[in-house]
Image (cartoon, rainbow, N blue to C red; front, top):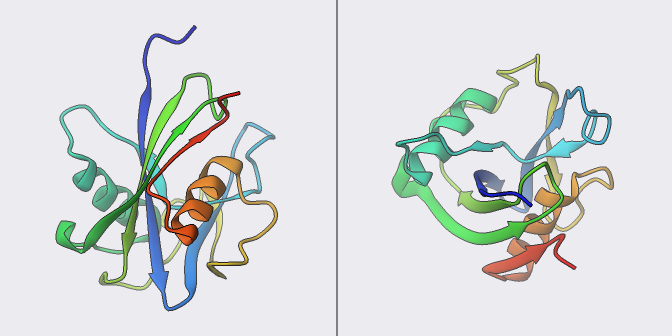
Length: 145
């Protein structure tokens, strides 16, 4: 049994009725080539807003003011990795810069998709958060039977 939970931040860059996704390059075949939101783990000593701002800039090169992030969903996920995770999903409607692939060693593509029609090969964890966001739900569980 895991003795800790990881905290992840996910950034939903929303432009009209579209959301930005990134295609992962991963040594784990369960995730390689599949779509995901810009996201990452919370670092020690970092606020969740600072983490979301950092991940957006590191992964897709956009700068977001913390005040332009809106918490839209919390997902308690199990079986998306070795340890359970608490995923915090933040919507950004404003940012500076045009999204580009800033981590080609971890990402093979950056693409806009319709919010209500994400790709079928979207990883389940972010897919659950994105579906909940679209439905207006602020909390959910994923992978807990």
